Image (cartoon, rainbow, N blue to C red):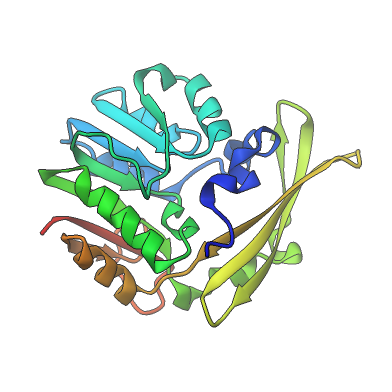
Amino acid sequence: MIPTEPSEDRLYQAAELAQFYDFDNPSNPGHDYCRQLAKDARSVLDLGCGTGRLAADLAAERSVVGVDPASAMLDVARQRPGGDRVTWVEADARTVRLGRQFDLVLLTGHAFQVFITEEDQRSVCATIAEHLTAGGQFIFDSRNPAAEAWRGWTPDRSRRCFEHPWPGTIEAWNDVGHDAATDIVTYQTHYRVVGTDRCFSASSKIRFTSRDLVAALLADVGLKVDRWLGDWDGGACKTASPEIIPIGRLA
């Protein structure tokens, strides 16, 4: 049984929380790398597109479809500059079937980790395989469990502030718990409007999956990895690399 369905996560599904996402995450280190990877692609499928920053950017020069299960995130995506160039689809990456193939399939922002069973992760990999052209490429990222990124998600270490057009200054922080037996991390995200008692909160679950298991899941659905990156600067994936980033194609 899945403890938390990705589509039910309030952090992405609730409009009052989705409005903070871009301001709390002003940049994504993977976007520059993906832009370069998409250079020769005529079509791109962005699974787990969220608020659509990367999809809208890539759509300036090619056909792009953005898929996400969270309607609140897609509402933000549709309203961003360039959002009218993207075909937005509200659907689950485990089950979506669009009836077409793409030169590049993306799953960035650690979206792979919201699928917390092997069965679900295998289903996402199958979706990637189903939508790749014969010469197409895929790329996604997952935090390396050996780097134990969750240790930095305590209230003291994660506290931060950012400005929002409405309602102003926001203080944000996280809290976290890690299940060593399953490598599932449960974390809370809190946004407090400074100067008031208004606070918006959500609880999320993600899975930290080993490189060996990621490789096995990809092989199960007929995908071959050409390169394993350990960071978005292009470094090789090593034992303690912060990221596990496979780049590959159909086997």
